[in-house]
Length: 189
Image (tube, helix red, strand yellow):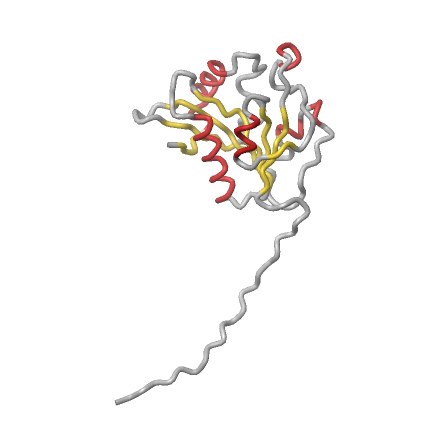
C-alpha cells in the first residue's frame, strides 16, 4: 500500500532507504527539494516502510529538479497544464512484489487524480523499457545528473515524460448547458 507521508516525520527513514538503495553514488540523501515535495511511502503488510518516492508540482515550486540539472538545460517542458515530477523512487532490495512498479503506478494514479497534464522523471537504461511500457516517452538526450555521481559511474539519466494531455493541446472548457425537457404527459385516473 502506498500512502502520502510527512517528510518531517519520516526524514530519517527516507534518508536511510535512499542510502541503502542508491549505492552507485547519491551525492545527497536529502536535498533542497525534499522540503517542498510531496512524499509517499510503500508499506508492507506489517506497516513497515519498504520504499519511498516524492513528487514535485509545477504549481508549488519555482523549478523542478529536472529543470535544475546543469547538463539538461536544453530540455523543453510542456507549458500546458500542471507538470509533476516524480523522483527519488527507491525500495529496499530484500523485498519482492515489484515495489518500484507499485510506487510508479501509485504516482501515475496520484497525478491523474490531481489532474496533472504531464509527469516527468528520469530513468536509467535498465528501467527505460518498463517506463515506456507504461506510456512514457523520452523527451531529451541522456545527461549526467547533478544529484548522482554519474560522471564517476558513467551512468546517465534519461529524461522521460508521460502526457495525460498532449503537448500543445489546450483543454476545452466545457460550460454546462441547461437541459431542455419536453413537457411530460401526466395521466390522472
